[in-house]
Image (cartoon, rainbow, N blue to C red; front, side, top):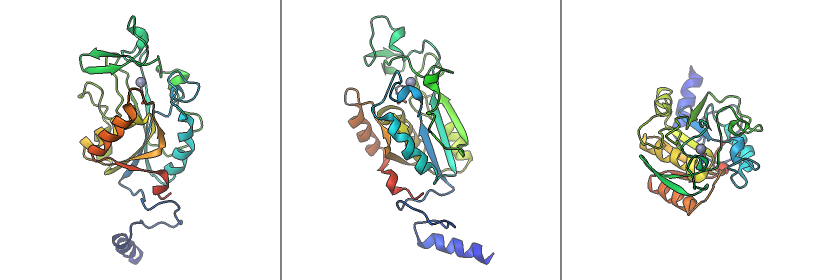
Length: 236
Ligand code: VGL
Ligand code: ZN
């Protein structure tokens, strides 16, 4: 009991929480109310995948490293039905990276990717986060895309993630993965809307960058109060 009192006192006076192991890295120490969201680190977005993000594979060791600092980890998978509305192949005359208007707004069209149960949809084989407690799959409604891990592109269909995180007492979310300017950014923006303190770990992400999307994503995130950090800022 006296030990417990000492820990509580210590917490008030330093930025780091009590740990039996010396921590390395930066001054942000994930606590019991912190979760890491690992977004769409799937074969389809890695080199050789149909929607390969430049250097997408380089996020894997960075994410594996920071994940060691988190007791709470959620991973996501882009998990499309075959013939999904976001695929250019289902819109005659359209090519990937062109846009169309859908009932919920402008949709970028993509090469077929991350179809349920295919190799493209599998998590990167070198990801190593055994403590991850939940995998959220999204984008499975054929007529609605879902970049965000929280809310689909119609702006109203929920994945249930905010309720799950609240039920587990999470307050601070750290977002990493692919791609910075689409699923990472939309997830971080929705995390702010849901009231979470939100960090994006820049070097644990890579972007697609089509038609200025990467600069716009960072500007939108800054405006929404998303904090842009590096993996070295996190104590692991
Ligand atoms: C993503 C485009 C299409 C992503 C998913 O994970 O950022 N981007 N589907
Ligand atoms: Zn997708």
